[in-house]
Length: 141
Image (cartoon, rainbow, N blue to C red; front, side, top):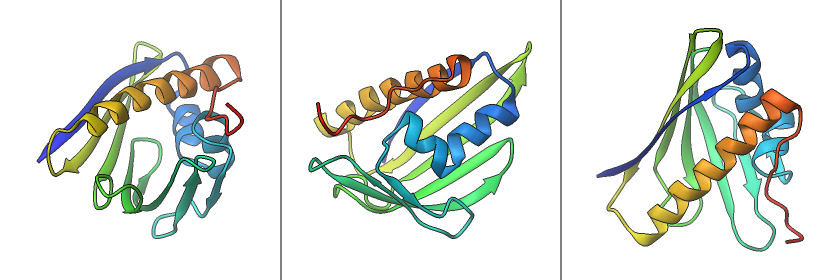
């Protein structure tokens, strides 16, 4: 099994980062505006990327403000069954985010592309938290 890992900091409170990371209305502002569903534990979050694809996630652990876990229910075959884990800590007045996208069957080019995309969307999340404006997927580009 292979994993994608990221560690980054956001100059914002852990409560604000967790809210922006986990709530549908904010996921729309940093990941894709085509996000619907229920962000509560056991619900389903549906993310669409225009005609390029979709992801369905199930929040399996919602432990505000320190931990969030999503299981991929449906998506590109390489994503199916993978798990995304976010762990948040406060450090020196800012939020430290550990992220692992685990359970990839093997390292592939697509996995590398997804790692790059995660980094891009985490910058969008950081901008949303710090400046009030994310840069989510744009279906018109």
